[in-house]
Amino acid sequence: QVQLVESGGGLVQAGGSLRLSCSTSGRVFSNYAMGWFRQAPGKERDFVAAITRYGGTTTYADSVKERFTVSRDNAKNTLFLQMNNLKPEDTAVYYCAQTVKTISERPSEYVNWGQGTQITVSS
Image 1: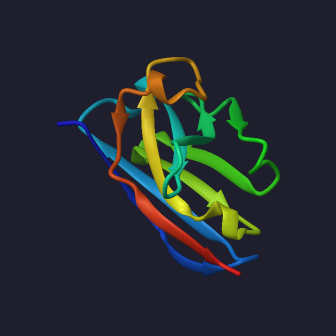
Image 2: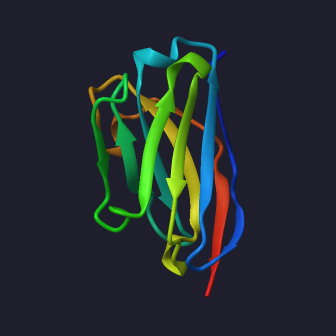
């Protein structure tokens, strides 16, 4: 069965750092480009970052460029999101997801999703 499980969320002060992990199982990890999305209360799901199947290309939302870094370890079937200089506006539930597209910023193009992990950034 396809499973994606996010970990590493929690409470952090503004300016701090967290690293999220997304562990996958059930299908060949490298068959998928991967993405991170987030959803704040009352808001739509927003794109955060994405990475191609072998990690050669990454893309980021303007709001997180220069602060967040997405990476992957295909040998361990794991996706990462390093988040630095966190801001209160980063507070949201963060989701990892898989797409068969080369890379995508569109939630509708992702086919498998994790359950999400809460990130809360205090001011």
